[in-house]
Structures are given as C-alpha cells and as structure tokens.
Image (cartoon, rainbow over all chains, first blue to last red; front, side, top):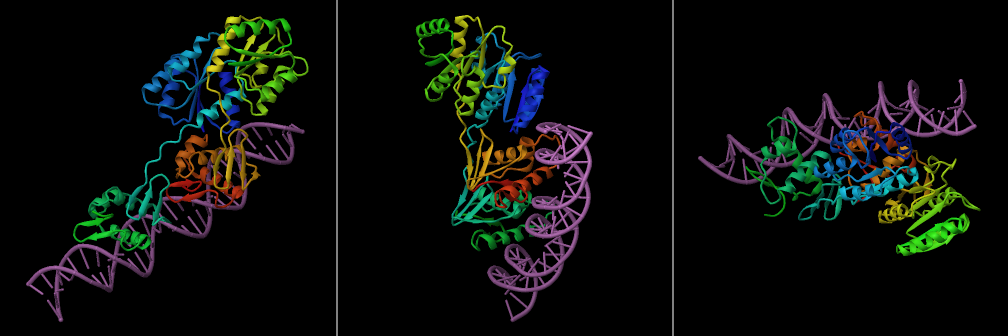
Amino acid sequence: MRVLVVDDEVGLVRALRRGLTAEGFAVDAAHDGETGLAMAVDGEYDVLVVDVMLPRRNGYDVVTALRAQDVWTPVLMLSAKDGEHDVADGLDVGADDYLTKPFSFVVLVARLRALVRRPVAPRPAALRAGALTLDPASREVTRDGRVVELTVRETALLEYLLRHAGRVVGKIELLDHVFDTGGEDPNVVEVYVGYLRRKLGRDAVVTVRGAGYRVGTV
Amino acid sequence: MRVLVVDDEVGLVRALRRGLTAEGFAVDAAHDGETGLAMAVDGEYDVLVVDVMLPRRNGYDVVTALRAQDVWTPVLMLSAKDGEHDVADGLDVGADDYLTKPFSFVVLVARLRALVRRPVAPRPAALRAGALTLDPASREVTRDGRVVELTVRETALLEYLLRHAGRVVGKIELLDHVFDTGGEDPNVVEVYVGYLRRKLGRDAVVTVRGAGYRVGTV
DNA sequence: GGCCCGGCTGAGCGGACCCTGAGAGACCGC
DNA sequence: GCGGTCTCTCAGGGTCCGCTCAGCCGGGCC
C-alpha cells in the first residue's frame, strides 16, 4: 500500500514515515501543496494524507484540484485543532476522512486501512466465443469450463482473435498486433495457431484459405 | 446520538448531562475508568467523552483497552490544563480529539457533532483467498487456520495480492505499491514471492510467466 | 496425373524469464 | 557496541518460450 504524506512539519512527517513503514506501508512525502499535488496526480498512490495548512497551496486546494483532474485516490485530511469549520469544509471538498491534530497514530492507521479498502474495480467481462472464454484480468483461458494453460504469446493471439470474433483476421494483421517481430513472415502466425489448436482443440480456430483465421461463429 | 461521559467531577458531569441533553444527545455517565470501560465496550455509543484523570483506571488506559478490544467508537479526551501528560502522550493511545479544561461548551458540542458525523472506521473484514487469510487490523496471516509469522514486507506483499485476488498483478505494479525502493529491478518481487512460498506453501502464489503473479482462483 | 501454392508441423536454438543461495547494509533491542 | 532480524542486491543456473527453418501435406488447376 503506497501512501503519500503531504505536510510541512518535518518532525511529524518523519514520525509518520517511520511508523507507517513499520506498519507495512510504502511512504512518500511532500512538504508543500504544489509538489504534493504533482506527486499525487501521476504517482499511483493507494491513499493520501494531506494537511490543511500547507505552503504554496493549502490542503483543500490540493484535494479540489485532484478531483477536478479525475484523481479519486482516497484522502485523509489532517486539520489543525482549532476551528471546527475546517472539518465540514474538508469533507465538502472531497476528502474521505479527517483527523484533528494532535491525533492518535493508532487511529490514523485504522482509518487509512479503512480507506484503502476501496470498492474493487469492476472487472471487465470475460471474452467469450462458443466454448472458449478468456478473462483479461486473470489471463485465464477455459475450454468447456476447463482451464487451459497458455503461454503469454498464445494468450495474446487468442485474445485478439476473440476481440474480433466472427470476423476473418488476416495473418499480416495478426503479425502487426500480436507479434513483436518487425518481420513479415506470416509463418509465426501459423505456428501459433497450431499451438492454440493443439491446446484448445482442432476446431477452435478455423482457417479461411487465402484470407486468414476466424474464431467463433459468423 | 448516544454519548457516554466518563468523568469523576460530579459537577461537570451534571452540567454536561443537562447541556448535552438539551442539544439532543442521550447521555450516560460513569464516574471511574473501570465502569466507563465496561459500559463503553458493550454499550452502543456513538461517541465517548473521557477525562484523562480518573479513579481506578485513567483515560489513556481506558482508550487503549477499548481499541485493543476492537471498539472504535470515536473518543474525545478531556485533559487537565496543566497536564504533565501532555497531548503528545495521548498521541499513541487512540483518541480522536482532545480538549483541555476548561473548555467552552459550544466548542465541545461542535467537536462531538464533528466526530459523530465522521464515517466510523469499521473493522476491516479479513482478506481471504482459498486457505489463506489476512486480518488487516492485526496483520495476522493464517494458512489452513494455522497462524504464520511474516515480516512486515512479506505481509504487505501478500496484502496487495489478496486485495487483487484472482487478478494477475504485474511485478512493476507490485514494485510501485509494495516496495519502497525507487529502483525498477523486479528481482525484489521475485525474492519476496519466494519467501512467501517458503512460508505459505509452494502453491500459495502462482506465477504467470511473462505477466506477473496471482493469488487465489478466479 | 503432375504441378503449384498456401498452410501445417516437428525440430532446434538463442534468449528471456524466473528462482534461489549468499551476503551486504540498515535497523533494533539488549 | 553487538548479535539478530529484516530488506534488498547480486550473480548463477535452470527452465520454458518465442521464433526460425525446412520439409511435408493437401487442394486446385492444367
């Protein structure tokens, strides 16, 4: 779990880094809003800890900018102790939780854990054609419900064919989209179609002489 | 909104009871740490107000015991003005907010409302995949019901894999989210997968050659 | 039947990929 | 300090994969 801490109190940041590292988090830190925002945008973080009071750009601003750029990483805001209006503001802006300083480290970790458990990204549906299925996420291929072990290249070929199921796909097209070699020898395709047939059954891929290959019914 | 006030100053408790009732809270009270703890554990309160100085068991103790029993009801601590137990001490106990006596009643109510409004961090459900479980709260890992000792990094790796169970997770992704090294050498991942396998069984993590690793079946 | 052409396949090589043992460096508790 | 643990690096080696090559097969056409 990668967490970004944006705070300008070096002591607190150091403490958090040590504590969170011990808890198994991978910790990055930024000391002002501007760089924190930049890091949050293109860094792939699982959760952010953002102080409200920050140089160059305050915490609200950072969160607002993030959400405006379609970054929905969960944010835990740290607000100064005085001023309860901070809290409502933070939640309105798009933060997911807040803690007032001084806060308990135990509570912080518990909250972070709760935030990280975000709704699992909806899995793209499995590709399917007849008795064949291919799950893009797990790279698992089945024939008649039975799992079949394929190599990376074989899977890539089958995936391309499945994504164009019912259509005749030319060898040159497959060469371009599936195989890395700049070469033009379509024999590689033939070889790999052979591998697929051997593992998935003779009729898994049908040859259209002079045109290419087809998977699935028309 | 049910609030439990744990304080031994009868005058203060009476004032709080009257004031908070007028504000719409349902108020219970305890006068020492022991009974306060007992009430907090099985009473369903939305928020607790706990004084630091208490007979039979001090405030820090109470909160620590609560958190240890997985009770995460938000706690607002009342600390004495001159407390040698400074706020810094409470930082590792598990309270959510602090007020120093004497305090303004208006501020207290505002803080309580803020605490209650906040989404309570529920105990995260255990991650599970096949014979493996990982409790995010206690960092405890079991295989076939047997507890397995893992280091921090090993746990972090397993947690990430479990949170994406069924999906093939690439080494680079694991590097980014689990390991702190800015480097790009995926060998670390391989090494740690090796450690996990040694402790959890050879089949705990399956490698998908050319793609990454996967935990659990789809 | 003979020939041609597109497709199929067994064999094999170089290399990518992955695993593992050993060990250096950091950190921590005593 | 000092021993132990943990994290990460490094190098070596084994395995499997991707691709090429060459030869074979079978259908279509004369």
